[in-house]
Image (cartoon, rainbow, N blue to C red; front, side, top):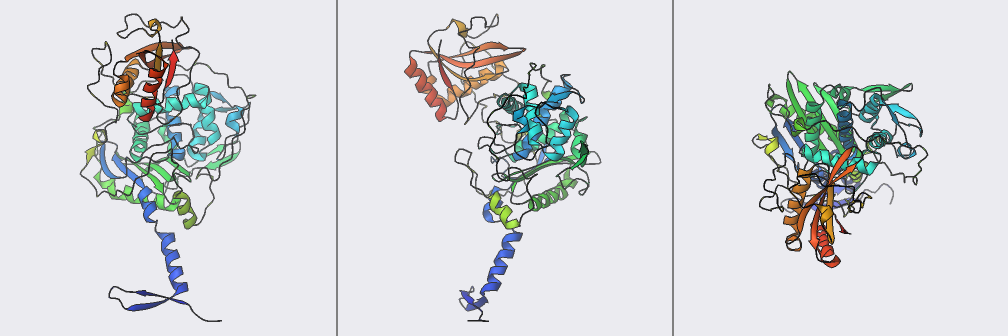
Amino acid sequence: MTGRIMHIRTKNAVGSALSVPLWLAAATLLAITAIQPSAAAEGRLASIVIDANSGDVLQQNNADKQRYPASLTKMMTLYLLFEQIEAGNYDLNSRLSVSANAARQPPTRLGVKPGGTITVEAAIMSLITRSANDVSVVIAENIDGDVDSFARRMTTKAHQIGMSRTVFRNPNGLPNSQQVTTARDMATLGRSLFERFPKFTPYFARQSFTYQGRVIRNHNKLLGRVDGVDGIKTGYTRASGFNLVTSMRRNGRHLVAAVLGAPSGPTRDNHMRHLVKAHATQLAAKKTSFSLAMRSKAPAAPEKIQVAAASSPPPAKKPVNDDADAAPEKSLAALAQAALAKVPDSAPAIAAPQQTAAPPPVRASAVAPPPWQVAGTQVEQVQDIRPRISSVLQWRGGAAPARDTSSTERQADKEPTGSSLPRAATLTGWVVQIAATNSENEALQLLKDARDAARKPLSSAKAVTERVAKGPATLYRARFAGFADKQSAERACAALKREDYSCLTLKL
């Protein structure tokens, strides 16, 4: 009937009926939904604030719950590029080759062409401002030859500097259910970048750069708007929500904060503004603590890789709204719905809200000890195993380690003289390989952890490492040997997989 107003009836606290126009109720509900993130969205929001001078944690909420990093991934890509520059393998004017694979990456892109080149400095700026997925792959392929190898390097470095809950599968943060991190780990990475590479961190404060006549502006909306903010990186995918790591320095004081999983860009930025404002007065005036990154050494020169522009892998499928830096502005309701996308079953579970009141300051290095620190498991014939850094390259949740052509069938690979472990080349029968690392101590620690996790199937197996030269690099395979037959080796491998270790069986 024309002009008629429909009403909905409800009851107040004492049971009296209230009559509310349906249009008013709907409008009110829509307004509330647009302004406030839902309870589920709040549960996905994770944050942490660290005093970069003292290492104190000033605020944390879901800080150790795994989330998707999205384009925050590029912070680690830059970290590794800075290492290569510092080691003398590149300078800012060095030219990086562009492959067909790199050029066809989904947006956001800088638009580099196959067969062309880009300078290291332009590559740095394109990741910071444009969040260029194509240039991220250019960097990866020039350093390690392919994306998978570079991703393993990223994970290795992450664990070395204390990012114990992070795994990388690509250099740009495009959707991958196995690529996970935490707010604490991302703040650790941000702090590590500023401590380890002070001469490069001014790049993160740049609000724009010019490439081939185009002015490309930074997507970090806090730059120039919040006093003291000098970087560092934004990120977004539908699965991750809106992410941000921020550095703020005032009068010698330094704060690093991370917000992950926000339902919209404005929500993320406003929350970060609040964190910076709330904790800016609590910061130490002098540097009294350093991150684990300060103990890392510059890497050896990488093997020279020819990146062939003619290489043409199958075209990548174009994801929908794969990065916030390319995403157009949408309604808050749509952004909230995107941020609440279901996490794939293969990814770590997202926990319910765990909002914590501001705790007493604790040392960042003392919070959340790495899960692999296990004592009491003896590796055969090793009297003292105390690695300076923890085990890496565990490929948890990923595919099995690739079977490389330089395995024990190649008799040229020799165990170093005086090794305290059995020489893998002298063993016979079936073995189970769980990883290959760039440090023997790391391989030993990984073997200890794996034996403790799988227990009975590995109780009588021999833990061995094998040194392998790959060009200028040296790797150490982590293996269990001494299995009577293929079936016992496969049972051990199956037990490891149940504990989220990847492995493969080999006949020597």
